[in-house]
Length: 196
Image 1 (cartoon, rainbow, N blue to C red):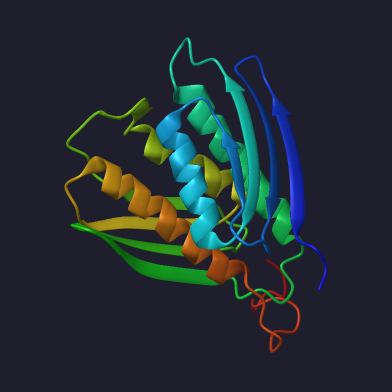
Image 2: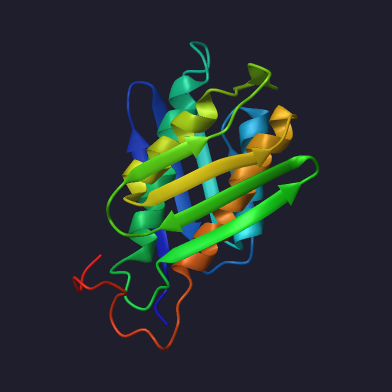
């Protein structure tokens, strides 16, 4: 099987991001974004999806966390898209219902090449550490559109903002791992069009 690794560098006036993603890893994470809770979320994404991810961000945190988090979503989505490659042999779809204490999250992924986000998370707090809760949507939106995937994230229950966001990141990683996994029964891609 060919290696499914991507390396992405993206530099703007607002952020400088360097990322390396191995879809067939073992959960090794080397994360540095300057936002502690966001580091924790990307670490959870890596470990629960059994990816290997190196992710370094230098962002304009003197302004706020917005550019760092949103641009990280752009880079992660692009890294996923490039690592998946031509999508031959992958399952394409992945989903999970994930519990975390009082929180229950449903996540479904379709690596169809048509970006779309359906997002239904609600928070009682504006911040978790230095992470604005409103930025969870911006991150997943950026991942979905840059990664050219359908991404659905729905909250069935939950009251603790930390738990809700963490469960969403974990659910996304597990659904993505399923969607990117290969099946020897699949010839080409799973699509009536013959292309994804």
